[in-house]
Amino acid sequence: MERIESLDYHQEMTVNGIRFWAYNAGHVLGAAMFMIEIAGVRVLYTGDFSRQEDRHLKEAEIPPYKPDVLIVESTYGVQVHEPRKIRESRFTQKVAQAVRRGGRVLLPVFALGRAQELLLILDEFWEAHPDLQEVPIYYASMLAKRCMTVYQTYINMMNDNVKKRYDVSNPFAFKYVSNLRGMDQFDDSQPCVIMASPGMLQSGLSRELFERWCTDKRNACIIPGYCVDGTLAKHILTEPTSISRASDGKDLPLRCSVDYITFSAHSDFLQTSQFIDQAKPTNIVLVHGESNEMGRLRLALEDRYNKGSEGHKIKIFTPKNTQAVQLEFHGERIGKAIGVLPKRKPENGMQISSVIIRQDFNHTLVKQEDLSTYTNIKISKISQTLVVPIRRSFKTLTGEVIRTFGGVETGISKDSNRPYLTVGRGVSVEPVEDGLSVAIKWLAGYKADMIADSIASLCISLNDLVDKDPVTFELDADYYQRSLEVSRKMLASRFGTVLGVEGDKNKSRLVLDLVEVIVDHHSGEVECDDEIIRERVRMALRRIQAAVFPIPDY
Image (cartoon, rainbow, N blue to C red; front, side):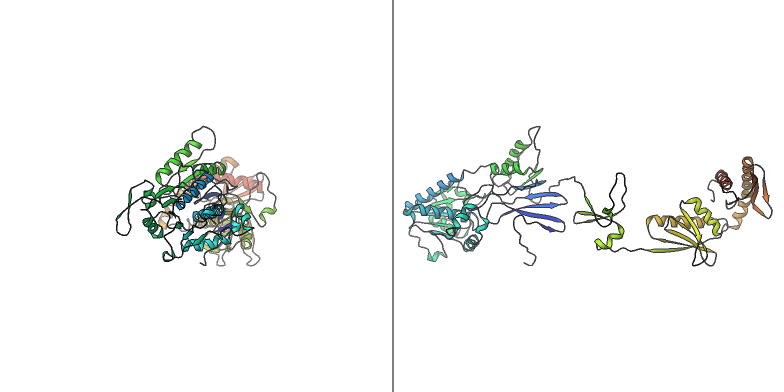
């Protein structure tokens, strides 16, 4: 009971992002249709409903919102109920004829719903016919008695007819109707009207009374509602000459009159089709009906909505029990920007960077720095440091990094007084105190991780020549010398005379526009006071190395 919450019609509730609210269904007191909204898709589940106002209930409401899916009952298929005034007149006349000829009338009903409607009709009819007022009317059900207390209390949930009568007296405080507490207090020798359950005569008091009265032609049984195949109520409508007694199977002659006057509060074809006309659903799922009636209703609805080339097309489904129905919906996802994000007015073509938070089918856009303010999400940062051995100078590494990445900043650390470089404002590289390694530091992230991995690979590639196997290195030395000569010749063909540098076989010297240029063929560094000339020679050297070595070292 702690998990049960009550709600009123039209009161909106939300559970785990699923919104739902109720409409009056008109079937019985308190009956409700539920509109359920999941991720913007609306599903209306009618349950049992009726679009016909009777003596105490309002008709089912038409929702103001168009449902994407309508799950609707198909109890009566394509059948149409007779008009209310005609069936009430037939009903009261049948009852009056039976009691006036000295007979008893059995009304098999269920305890809630139609029982109260029939009692209102009979009490009003008795009031208008004094000759019948000596004939008692009973309802023989403890559950019906408890239900009567509810009906006497919730007058405000009923239609205007009952509310007007309530200004004078409670219409459910019956004048000619009383509760039958037990068969031991019942005088079965005089005419009477008894309303007993269950409504389909399977067992219980209604079956007992029917077997007792069915052999007398003065008596009458009026079936006021829907009957299921295989029940005694359905069987006696076929006008058999006898029935089997439930206790011993003995045949009993059926001499009493049997009439079917439906007061069912289930929707018929006219009510259902008119309801669909006004609700305008995209998909319909038929439930709560016998397969044949459901099939006829589907064909009638298909003919009504889907035969023409124009108009409102509807998909109609008739699933069996436990059979799933799969529907596909396309909709827009709308995100609500909060925090500092919406403070800047958006402009055409403007790019926005934010975190999208999905919760209960809602999407929220928020800047990363606002996450802790508007959500329960904790922000964590992982600072990583990778120490990589290096056999070249930090200056050489800096040159390689500059040639590989854009936006490289260099400087001298105030704390350690050692040079450093920063790539993309997120990855810093600084030589370790021993001079044999560099420390790569960054905050974890997909972009910074890739930059850090690339710098580490550069460090390892710079170590390759130093770490070569001695035999391999000797074999490579001759190739390197020939490549060095080719490189010098290609520089000379472009810039003029190229000379070696005494004491360093890897370097060359040339003069360009009266400016001296020193080229290190091994590291790829170019020394020159003129920045423009230095860049010209450096670019030429890189092209030469790309031609000489399939995979250059820098």
